[in-house]
Image 1 (tube, rainbow, N blue to C red):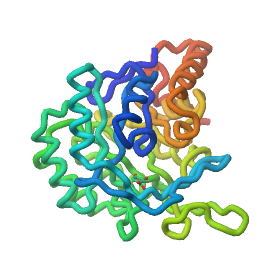
Image 2: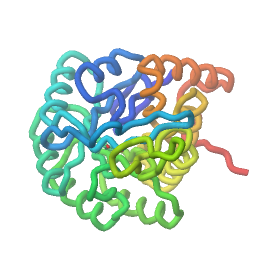
Image 3: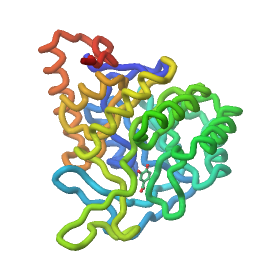
Length: 307
Ligand code: DHB
């Protein structure tokens, strides 16, 4: 009932984790793999491992979360080796998230993945807001186009991009025009809303960047849905949409799919609730579909109605 397809790759369930949540090491990744989720995405890897920013760097609040992790990760080799090992045991397709700290590093990492026997998809992260001195790449469209031109000159495996939220119709138009130039498997909308500020009494709640961090959860669902639908309207049909942002109920999953998402990721709510959330969301989405008489997600995907 909840199966889906991206770039010809099939998934039994349209739900998965959002990069950064429950995906730091093989223990966390195995928990997602063995849950009701259709697959997982790894923590965004850099070429070599990183400690990340000083603690506290993640805080949940009633309406969502703020984080400034700073890309703590175990390095590309760790995630690539783990996923290649899993691929020998199952038929599932896995997502490897990565982001170089420079164009050269990104290209070098992608060359390594290209030369490996990795069979899954790459989610190239163009939107990390938390490394001091490194702006969110996908807000600079000429630099993004230049990077993707160099990537697709040699990279032949399925690759998509994780995007930051855009907030203006002119930016949706300009961004979609760039992404449509490339054979992307998917775009993932959205990463956290970058550089928000949450205050408790008189004080910030995370240490890095004097409290500025990426916002997730309820705060960002309307922005996420708008980005999913804006790109669904503008991208060529071969580029699928992964919807991410503010998903904590089956109804939220339903709305992302209605806006055009082929797969839906869960971040803040997964961090709060644990991997059992995938069974709950699957059950809640199934109930909505049964009430409405939908047999597959293709029956309503992208069919948002207008007044
Ligand atoms: C981090 C946060 C992000 O939103 C992202 O896309 C990548 C990394 C981080 O702070 O670790």
